[in-house]
Image (cartoon, rainbow, N blue to C red):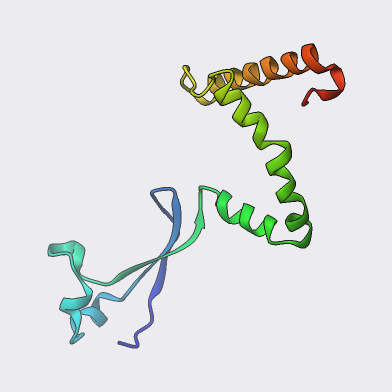
Length: 136
């Protein structure tokens, strides 16, 4: 209704997202004609309008970062090469070695298991084709 909200908290966190929380003056809300549509809570908690504006996410937007990276001129040149260089390695590890799932839980243990899978792949490459074909 044209009233000014005041900053209540610079950082309020909910579900990994940081918000700035603004609230209206209780006197403004008491006299407001559209109060019923604005304030949902009943009792003491619903005396004034509270607005939370997201400004920072704890979780990184990896998809957005990757999309921005690919949209550059350099990214458009390099990314298609991935299909020929990297993806066959993942497919080989998964289908031929039947290493299609992790049997351990936890980020550290899964990382160790993945590194072991990669070592198996590289040792096989060295044994079959020589050290120049191993992926580092």
